[in-house]
Length: 89
Image: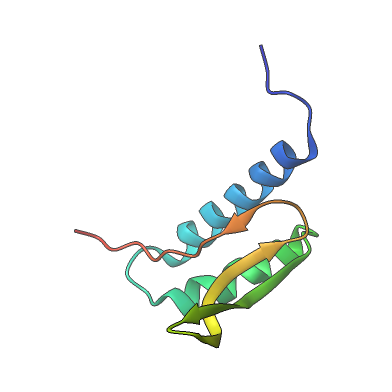
């Protein structure tokens, strides 16, 4: 029995594949910004629309901080893509 046919399943497959491709070429131990730049390039090659480093406000002690949250990658579909560097232990 296969997965339910839904656009998010395809998007998940493509984005996971892009992440694997980046890791395969770069390996572990680089800064998050390196992986993020390469992942953005891979998503563009695969035709996936996204926004990078989307900021959301956060209320703290009665004031609004404009950069309370920063989302690494936000696609047009309901998928959040955290960019987490890997470290060899």
